[in-house]
Image (cartoon, rainbow, N blue to C red; front, top):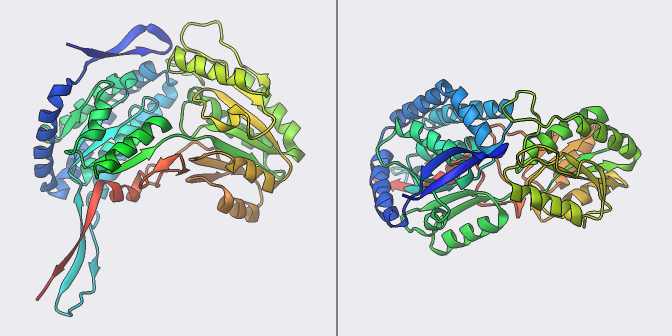
Length: 455
C-alpha cells in the first residue's frame, strides 16, 4: 500500500506520521458515499448538528496536549504557538455549533398580501477542502466547522506535509458525524481529483497563488463554486508619530515567529524617514535576540522552516535582493531546516523581497518620505491580504486604512492575528471568492433559495 510520510523539520530523519494514500480508483466510491451521507446530514436537525460540533470541540480540548505536540513536531511550530492553535480549533467548532442555530433566511413582503415570501439557505452538498501545512489544525477547522454546521458532506485534502495532524482531526470528527460524511483524501494527486469532480459542488482552497489559480479555474470551468486564499506580501507602516518601541515588539513577533510561515506574516516594514534610523536600530537589536531552538522547547520563538527546499528558496531570494542585510541571512550550525531571522534594508518597492512572497523568517525594510508615500509603497504589490499601521493620530489612521489595499487592516497591532468570528480574506491576488470565518462563511457553504407560497 502506498503511504504518505511526514517528517519533523527540526530532525528530518524522524518520521512523524505515515498515512495510507487514497487510491485514485477509490475516489468515485468515496464521493458517492459522501453524497449519500450528505443528503442525510442536510436533513438532520440543526440542534443535532450543533451537538455534534460541540462534542468535536470537547474531544479536541481533551486531546490538546497530544495534538499540540503533534503539530509542533510535524510542521516545526513552537510548542507555545501549537498550543494556541489547538485552542483556536476548539473554539472554532464551539462557535459554529452555535451558528448552526441561527435563522437560515429572511421573511420578505409578498407580491400578494396573502402570500408568504422568504429565503432559505440550503447546504451545497459535498464540499472539498484543500488545506496547507502551516496551520494544520486551525485552517481545516475553520473550513470543516462551517461546512458541517450548515449541513454539508466534506472531502478533506490536507497537505502531504501535515497528514498526521489531518488524520488526528478526521478521527475526532468521525466519532460524531455520520459514516462517510467526512472523507480524508491523502496524497499529492487527490487535490486535482477534488477540483475536477462534478460530485463536489464547492471547493475551498488555502495555499500558493499558482496552485490556487489552477483550482479556481478548474472548479469554475465545470460550474462549481470556488474560494481561494493564496498568500500575501504584507506591509507594516510606521508613521512619524508612532510608538516605535511598541511597533517593533509587534512587528518582530509578526515577521519572525514560526519562522515567518504565516500567510499574514509581516513581509515589509515601511518606516517614515523621521523615525527610520531609530526604528531600524531597534529592529536589528530585537531580531538578534530571537531564540532558535527545538520547537518542543517552550523558549523557542522561531523554529525551522518546513524543509530544506524552502530554506534554499529563501536564501536564493536574499541573494537576489539588491538590499543590505542588517542581520541574519545565513544557516545556523544546527540540524534541521533552520534559517537565521533576516532583516534586509532594500532600495525600493521593486526589490524581490518587496514583491515576492518569501515564506520564511525574512523581512524587507523600506524608507518612506511621507505618510502618503508609505501607503503607496504598501500598495505596490499584486497581493492584498493583511496590512498594519502604527500611529497615534486617529484621523490619520482612519484616512490611511481607507487607502490601504488589503482585506484585513490592523491599527497599532501586527499583521498577524485573527479572531475566529471575524471575516477573513484578501484583495487583489491574495483571495478569490467569498470571505472565510464568522457569519461570512454562510455565503460559501450554503446556497440561498427564494420561496414564495401563494394563497
